[in-house]
Image 1 (tube, rainbow over the protein chains, first blue to last red):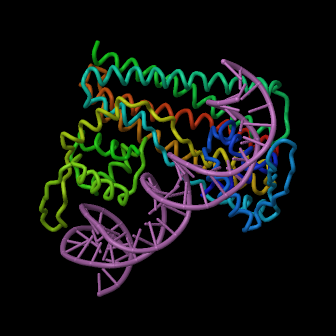
Image 2 (spheres, rainbow over the protein chains, first blue to last red):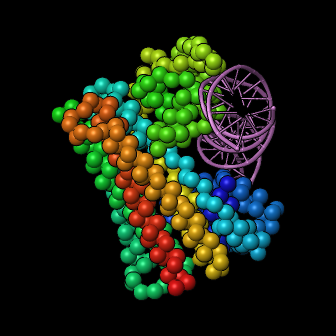
Image 3 (cartoon, chains in turn red, cyan, blue, yellow):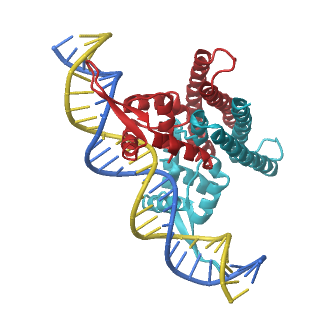
Length: 183
Length: 183
DNA sequence: CTTGCCTATGCAACTCGTTGCATAGCAGGA
DNA sequence: TCCTGCTATGCAACGAGTTGCATAGGCAAG
């Protein structure tokens, strides 16, 4: 549904090749929207036939040519329409929450394995939070009034930071609860 | 991937028909895993052929018959295997975050429409938090040591509550940021 | 010098998930 | 009385997303 629109936002912020988009989706945009290179290439071609984006062939030395995509006026219009439309309630998939409730039907060994998994998972999120905080210090060093784009990027990043802090606190709660089951 | 396992957990907690499962997925389990009745019926049939679940025909007066599903031993074993496996990093899709970054490319009217949408979205999450808190008071009134199943259900619910509180605080931040753009 | 990784794009096959529709009896309200 | 909605299951078609593989040159480490 909204992959097109996520790509439009990314291209308006900075024109890019499909490959570069895929890497940006792995990094900053991937905070709130994941996509593989396959999806991106396919959707870009569909958007091209719809006139939402245009490509410019860029030759490179010692590397394959790439196509630099930009948002076309029709794409900007489509984005404006989409911004006006109601926000879809997000479809949540928290595998870990399912596993935690499933732990009620595991034996002691199974729960011990889950504790180890939750610890690993917690370490991943701790590393992610550190990356976000480093990115914030790098990209938004002063609290002074920035332009609209930076202000909005920053508030989305603050959302990512708040999410990670909440997850870490909850995982501590989960670990304490799991450990209390077996003393 | 894990819909099978979410269904197994739900059936271990309480055997149910496909229809009842779909409604539970709309309510409590839907906090962390969404599924439509179509998916559930299809997956149940696949799980039946795999021997993970068994059905018992239940006649009802004045209503269509239903099939009450229960987890079979093979299903419990499959669940135990899955609990041991590494947790997949969650695939995030936050449409609202994309829209907020997209607001940088909207005009004043477009941003005003987004503010109204965010307010509506915030009201939905406020109502959800109230429902979670009411459910917590109802199902977990005393802090005394409960059984494993209740303790794990409770910690997952606390996760939902923490998530909603975090979202509400962030949405206030978003609203303040959006409003500051146009004074 | 060979192995593996990076840039860059793409096909094919598959699974997962959504949407619209159908059936069918019963209950409750306008 | 008609209309809407609930229980209960299901088909068919489509769209979204994943996985494995292919190509093809360059670059760096071992």
